[in-house]
Image (cartoon, rainbow, N blue to C red; front, top):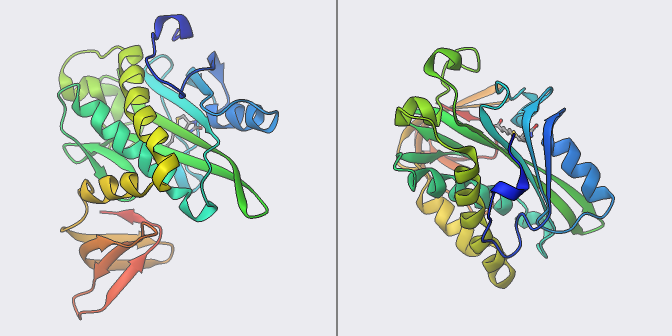
Length: 254
Ligand code: BTN
């Protein structure tokens, strides 16, 4: 089991309080409950297994017990609600960097999936609580497929991979978590000064989707064209063949 005492975190804020569970419904749900009861900024919830892990857009997030990094952070930044998506971008750039420092070529697929060799290795689910015109807290949930053997990937999704499958050897989940939190912590602290502008620019500069020919399924619509850039809100700017530039706010890119 992943426990707090083996982590040796070197962070200033993130993971200063840790709730470590063998099994739970969803670490995002536990974190939300704790946040509503006043848990501190940077509180981390980790679990070895989720019975109802959630993905973006109402999907399930599956992970065999003890195989993956399943964690949620309670964040209480002083940030305008319009900039809350930058917390997801923060997790994405940090996850990319953490996986890269293990020697694997991770990239960010718009909006916030982490891929290795075109297959998804990690996802992020951010949920916010807005009170009036302020962000009361955000829960940033991160799932990384760590030690799932190649044979177990197909039942997660046809386009899933794991660090084990890509590296050819097991990766210690504690090591990955340490790296991830260190990458997040330094950027999270810097957000106080610039409302997350640097995080946004780093995310933008590292989006593998930009410059590519894409097809985006966005609700009932399918938008095809060249992904030229993102706008200040993180929407993907797709140039359709007839020349029109469309800002896509959500969807699945293929
Ligand atoms: C996605 O890509 O759809 C987002 C996946 C997010 C999964 C993580 S696992 C830890 C946390 N708890 C959840 O129920 N979901 C997130």
